[in-house]
Structure formats: structure tokens, C-alpha cells
Image 1: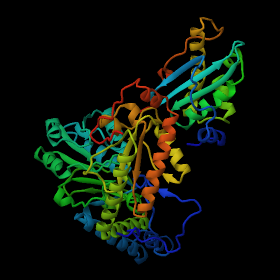
Image 2: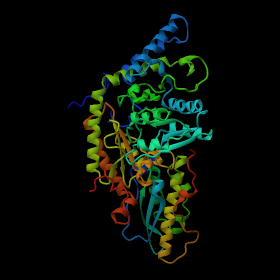
Image 3: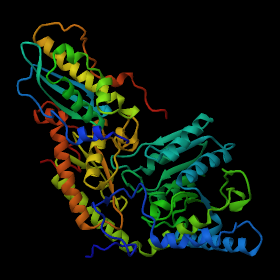
Image 4: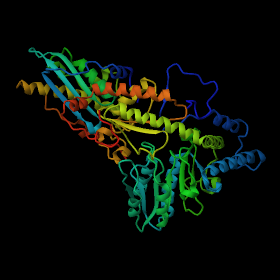
Length: 422
Length: 146
């Protein structure tokens, strides 16, 4: 099995002075050189405004149409149903707020889950302030929504449901097709935030039968600040941006042509290499999970063991705090993310980790490592070796660990099915 | 998180980390739910001088660095000198902390006070200016606006 990157890299790429292992691909990804090359001519040469009537403008329009067709093909969507936005956050805000209001005469109840991205939960909070009622579906210990629980939450005045396709922290993939079918059986509009899922899970909007879907290019090697909202024909939603007649009069603003071209190229590459990428990421993920659980005592895997994104891992290490872990790993060249309060800049740990039932003190010690195509087996082995060393150093400093060793306090999470005791 | 070089130094190479086998006083403050706990061990001689000090901390880099600096500042000082070392002094000695991390320096001050309180109780003495430490300083803080 080769350790070569599953995606094309820049030919001049050389090993940096200090080895950097980027394991935060759920935060953002590297823009591929081929994507940049695709974008560049639309800045300096074909920079016309697609709304201009002369040929120079219409050439940009043609490029835009071409990008839309290519993206639509990967989703098995109608090209007219894709609306370009500034990214996942805008798509989520639009889908939630404007659709809720468009159907407000029918009812003001919305169903979502307890593990959504803040773009959804904060939009829901905003809607609540404007007279809507929100139900947050509980998830099980692996982060899965029970379709029966979803169905039971539907009321006569429910109009909209929004469920995250694959969770950004713990990587759990929801049974979207089943949930969409339940929504439609009750006449609901069904939206899914697929920001993490697109290009990492095969998505066929016709087969899944979803009404709306949000995506963002920088999660799949495209540029930042560009994404789209898929809105199936016939779904009522209001315009989120007022202005010109762009995007079938639904999203005003001059189209970001270079970024849209880059997004289309990035999706082309990711989908062309889909099988190789999934094989590589899944293999490295399994190596990482198996080694951590076997070699680091009092660790657990958060999220579902198999129904998870190919590149996602999320661990909790008892008696250590996430920010300390992150900073120490950074000193060793490993870039990761944590759900601890300190790392997030608030006093509460991640709502996702709390929703799957982790006690606060365990959630504070969480570490998310998300694998990209440049990562090798050596990188994973080095990462595990480093984590072992860092966790044991931090535990030697931890009064919680001292008490645990002295038998003073019971440990809450060690009995979990995913934890190996030593 | 923009930490000063001193904070990163004390986080990476903490001073006085560990425990004392026969401490004169031990204090533990903080709350695992909020993400930080500090424990300070003091060895105080008959003259009331802090001869040795150790700490253990579960928490972020600022929590580790403030514990390390606080123990440095009280080492070799008398009880009364130690009591005058405030969280502000700890912050300044570290070249400042990000605003959201100021509570860590308060926790370090509290941990020293808690260890002194424990010493006073064990020796049945009253230390002027020392009041019973709060076990959880987070009670006063407000949650992030949602």
C-alpha cells in the first residue's frame, strides 16, 4: 500500500524545516494547486461581470454555467437548483431563516438536532426570538438521531427540519435518506447541512430526496468564502440578500466567478479520486483509532465506530485538558482541534460532546484529529507516539489523575464500550 | 490564543511541578467541570517562611503558567509576604494574560490562600488577612452570550 498523497500536490513541495502534520482538515483544507490554476484566469483575464451584456461579460456567464453544471452533476441535482453563496454559514442561515418565514402561515415549529453547527443552532436561536418554536432532537451516545424520535417530534405546525449530514466534531453520519422520507411523509421541508459530508460521502440529492442542502468549498480543497445552497424546485424560500437579479433573483450580488470555478474544480478532483481518498483516509483513521485506544489508557473514541466520516477521529483523554494538549502537540508540529472550553474561548465545552453524554470534565479533554490526503502512515504513527508522551506528561501534572491513582474518585467514562482499561 | 513568551515558557517548563510528601498545608481550588483545578503544597518552617512549594494543575496553558509563576513568587517568602502576592502580580510577572484567562490567575492566588488556610487550620492558628477560600471561583463568572 502506497503512502503517496491521493491528491495531486505541487511539484516544488519540499519537506519544511520542522515537520508539520496538519490534522485539522475538518477546520479547513489546503487549496489544491490545480484549483488555484483554474481560478487565476478569472481574476486577470476573463474578469468580466456575468451580468454584463457584451461578450466579455457573457464569457464569464458561460464559465459560471459550466461550473454550475459540473457541481450539479456530482450531486445528481438540476443545475437550476444550485445557488452560489459565500459558504456554509450563509447557506445555513438562508435555509433556516428564510424558509421558516416562507412557510410561517402554515406553522412556526422547526425541528433540528442537538449536535448542529452553530450556523444552524444560532439561526434557530434567532428564529426563536422571532416567534418560532424549536425542538432539538437528542442523539444517542454515538451521536445518531433515532428516526422514530424525529417522527414523534413532528407536530401539525411543524414546517421545517434541519439535520446535519455528518457532524463536524465527532464525524457521525446520520441516516439522511430515512429522515428525509419521514419529513416528507408529514409534509415538512427537509434541509441538511452537508458542509462536512460533501466530497467525503457520496451524495445524490434525488436519491436522498432532500429539499435543501448546504455546502462549502474550503472543506474539500476549494477556496474559502464560497459555497452553495441546493434548493429543490418548488420549495418556497425568501431571498436572503436583496439587490440585483443574480442567482435567479434569489441571491443578489455579483457572482464570485474565480471562487466558483475553483469550487467546481476542487469537487471534480475530489470526486474523480473519491475511492482512493476514502480508502486512504479510512485506513489511516483505523490505524489511529486502534493504536490510541490500545496504547493510551483511559482514552475513548467519541462518535460512531463505523458510521463516521472517513477522515474523522475524536478522542477524550481523562484527567487532561484539551488546550494544554493542543498547545503541546503544536510544539511537536501536530495541528489538531479540541472541544474544550478553553480552546473554544468560552467556559463551556462543546455542545456536541455534552449531547453525546460526556461529563464536562471528560469533554474538556477532547481532541479532534481530522485526516487529509497528504497524511502518511508515518505521520499517524508519529502522532500516536507523541500523544502517548504528551498525555502521560500532562497526567503527571494533573491533580485529578493523582486523586484517581490514590483511589479517591471514581472515573466516569472508563466503563464505556469504546474504552480499553489498562 | 495569543500567549506571551513567558506564559509559554512556564507552560512548557513549569517550575515547582509535583507534590510534597509531608506538606505543612495543601489547597485545591477550581472545578473539573469548568476545566481547571489547581493544587498547591506548602512546606512552612517554624519561622513562618515558605521553604518549599509544589503544584499540580489540570487546565489550560494559562492555568499551568499561573500556577508555576505563583509558586515561584511565594517560594522563600514569609506567610505574610505570600498573602500580599495578588493575581495581578502573577499576571504582570507573566507579561499579561488574554482577558478570558484572567480567571486562571485568580485561581492561582486562591490555591495559595487555600494551602495557607489548610496550614493555619492544621496548626490551629489565625493568619491575619486570610479568609476561607472559595472552592469554586467560577461562580462569579457569566456564561458566554448565546
